[in-house]
Image (cartoon, rainbow over all chains, first blue to last red; front, side):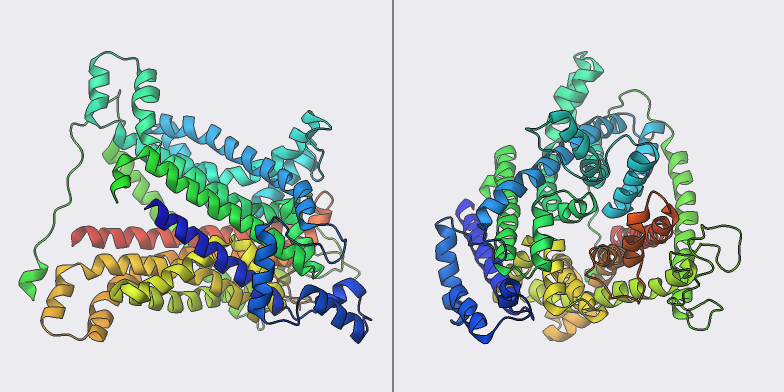
Length: 311
Length: 307
């Protein structure tokens, strides 16, 4: 089971990287123009092609690129001369910080709401939460971002609309800049988490062992948090992992809206600049991250639910 | 044939015993109230979608100004009780109403066409993979896993940049994006259907695979898949808007909702209506598609329960 998943993981990564390479070679814009501008001479174009190996068969190119990647060399940006790894080293932490904080906000909102609305099923709060969460799921991320920016940055001036302050420079300012993007990302996830957790806790509360705990006279809080919550958190952990992968993709737009210098911003800029080496490097790192997270979620699932190990 | 179909497999009842932690509200009444409200919401959603589609289709014959007609004597008007510019005008004096309606054309065309293509291609592949299994399934699995591994927006950015931004290429990009999900959904549904007695009966009676697929399996797979499709139209309309927002959508002067939002965003603090008119239209449309999709799914689950 584990080996098979690992095999699939490798195949998917190889296919994705090959597809990226193929797609970028099909670009209607020649990368030579990205370096020398519109007036590049034929000799310059040929030289760039030779340098990038574009004059070789696609499989040879791929093999060469793969060899480089496996030794940790993702190439050098065509425009800035910066290596892809160093470009990622400055941008990726920003993306990761937003994603992780978003995930934490989502869980912090979803866990109490989910458990409480399962406990008081059909109560006022439960109905309000279920209405709010079905609305939340339908709100597109960037619509929410614009609404948040309008109210919190322009009308009330609580949080800044754009920009970034590194965590090392000023932790408080850093947090103020993270809040709006993170909340934007967290909203949908929180809605989904709450729904799933509510339905899981709801069915767990009807199990025999909960009745037993109740009969022993355990206080309600203990029944909810110790007895019922843990066995109900299985789908939540899976979902949280999957959503981490989804958020990595979703930050692209959020980083643009809030002009944050993260990996998504880097990707969009390099796409507009026809910087194919950089695009390829960023895409492969992001995809590898997503695939790896999904793999780890599967592992976690195997650990949490022994029944799956047999399959 | 009939005797094989009417052996209902009763679903296991609710897990017993029913432990009450305090009182449970009044479930019957609450459910009744919920259903009524649901109906109103559903018809409002359908009404909004019909309105938007009609406006988009009839845009040329409606008494509104052209979307690119500037009016420099009447710029930056906020929305108000005025006819026909009750949604205001932008910095060139162009009618927001007209731009919204023509923009709806782009959004709806992209949504319906891309989901339509993904629906046909994905469902076909998924049904084949689910029914024939083995090599067909393996190939389609690997292909869809690969596409699903790439973050959607990244894949979309890649496709639209390689093909140059235009309406047609946007549709192609989104169709590629939607196909693997349809394929997975159709495959899963086909596999459960293929195990049903009436399918075995059909096979035993000597029906060829083509007939079994077309007459027994496809009609049963279509409903859940199309419920997902309705929701996906909304999602893809948002995707179109996102790409237009990044400047990778339909090129100007053709208006689109995402393009309008992008144009209004720099002036969010001074002229918020330029952003929020298209944002509200976008939200209502997406929400409506979601409600319709949910409703279709609920109907499907009801039918499923009767089997």
